[in-house]
Amino acid sequence: MTQDIKFLIDLLQILERDERLLKAPVKVLKKKTSDPFRILVGSVISTRTKDEVTAQAVERLFKRISGPEDLLKMSDEEISKIIYPCGFYRNKSKILKKLAEALVSHYGGKVPDNREDLLRLPGVGRKVANIVLSRAYGKKAIAVDTHVHRISNRLGIVSTETPEETEKALENIVPDEWHSKFNELLVAFGQTICRPVRPRCDECHIGEFCPKRGVKFGKKWIE
Image 1: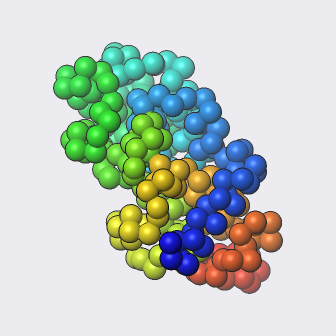
Image 2: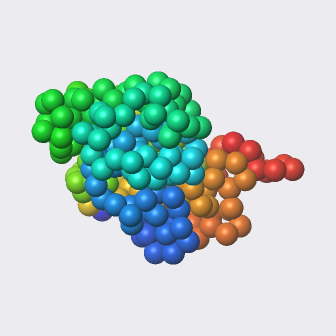
């Protein structure tokens, strides 16, 4: 094991023990369900939307539905009203209907457990596919969203410009046994401590190891 990988594992183990992360929206949602369909829908809704808004929208939607068949019975307008004010909520309502139709027509209403089939679904890219694989099925996959991309660079784990570059870099660095946990840990960390604006560096358990790349301190923390 190289020194860099040992350093990364040490950081991940510290985050895994940090009980404050249990209050993060991503952790709260996971406690409520490991249902692949709910995770898939939540991941689609989350694009360009704040974590708290996503969590509330998913909660409202799943009071009305339990599976893709229920979603097909709803109109685009109904779905839009439920998931508002998520970003691009009208477009997302149409995508969710197409997604439900594809699941029912081609997969018997079940969410696929492999990347190839997930990527065939409407509105599903690599990030969403990897979230489903890692959170719902516990498979080797690193989902790179804005939290993971930002924090991986802030910690100096990678030096990349895009989430796509970050995913490729992390796949070569993160040990296999951490792939399924990596996104959830960093998202929870980003939602509670290592926030985009005004990160709580003075309360961070890995602050002494962090180079704080991209963070400047003036009147307020800015990215």
